[in-house]
Picture 1 (cartoon, helix red, strand yellow):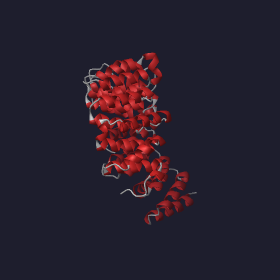
Picture 2 (cartoon, rainbow, N blue to C red; picture 1 turned 135 degrees about the vertical axis):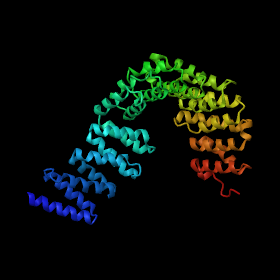
Picture 3 (cartoon, helix red, strand yellow; picture 1 turned 180 degrees about the vertical axis):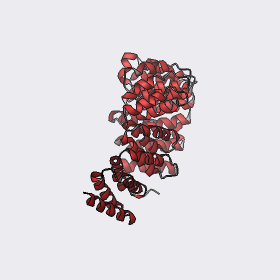
Length: 404
């Protein structure tokens, strides 16, 4: 047996000297099965060299060897993870491998990575690694919630993990004095359909901080299943009148997700109000499409005819082209064609006329062919180009042979 080990060690060293990483991986895989930890430090050194210099697949394979080597690999992997000058892919593997160790020593450096790294992919890997540790990481992070100087970091880490086990510790800080802690906890909690979360979100609708109210509004918007029971449309429509415009915009989005004619009606009332800022109007317009009702499209038609705003006209025409449901797409086509043929002042504006052509092409309804054929002959080149592009999608045979 010892002779076999010595032979493998020699072969491994030869492969290392010639940078034959694939062969070295094979020798290391054999050595970890037969070696009695007598040469573990040496094997670790060889394995780390592959992790540092190997290609993607070789790094993937050697990470399994590192796991088999045991806890002696944790410290050097942490050093790689903490070295900001190390290439991101190498740190990616270090984080991933540390997560599979499920060892308490790996928690702090992974948490620190979440705090300091600007690389979103690397942070996601660190969060996944913490998630792999399950209750071990959550227990450690929950302890960090009790300390003022680590509470925000712990909340952010728990938010990245996103497993049901994090609900209880996150609920413990939803009333925290620090705004960032409340916002982070509520945002993470809103992704869970858990009966403990809904009352917290409802209470947060009246938080003194706008950022907290906004998260609560958006979170409740993902619960159409509770709409009837809690009358969410009525609760959220009041936030269309919030003092903070971002909360108002969030309410528009949330109401569109809850759906129904009641939500549509509330959105329309605010859209038509002369006191509504343009920013909010431009948020409500797509919401009236996302809500997925005929009434929403009819309200947009009415708004186009009554509101005197080029930005509003442009947005209405654009979002009507994004309707996907067949019966609604037919109605959207009819509305756009009515705009085009009604001599509305908006249709004299080049950008809007072009947008109508583009939207008609996106909707793909054959009803638009005659009007698009007319637009191909428009005096404005931009309008002609958009009409040609639309006809190419719908009916290229209707394009004239010469477009001069």
